[in-house]
Length: 215
Image (cartoon, rainbow, N blue to C red; front, side, top):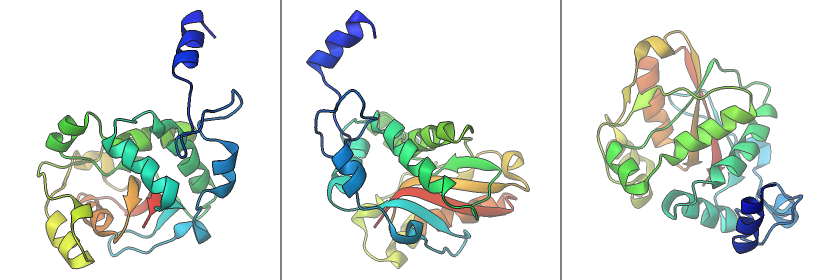
């Protein structure tokens, strides 16, 4: 470790991405207590979709997980992606029925990405792909900035809100391919269904999904 890195660690010690406890040198982004006590999903949080085959999730969106993801999305904590990627990659490895040719993500609109400073789902997908010795590929764009899904109620409202918001980035990339679509949080599956519908229309052979957390 360089002298500068040592000074930075003294001034700004690394903290657990979930509970913010100062980490020991052996810790890998989150503390032992959180490793043991996080709300891991049952049966990998399996959910079926209308336009995708199924979605798996690593954690439930509650407690320290929810607070951590909110810091990641809205508090500038983009560095959390590396830890999240390790957790999600482990969940993907534990799902032998999850087959894919391409890893991709649910994108933000350009307006939302400029405001936030980064696309959190893209960073998560890239970090997850790195853990799996893969590369995440852009397959979708979101030219229309719509009301945040978190501000809406039931599935019908969310489905109507997101309809037509996404387009395929390059149909040649997805033609005949099975896509693993990654997002940070899933609730009603409306966004994943809409993205899957667009990818299938562009020629994808099938869609499976994985998220860090589910509601």
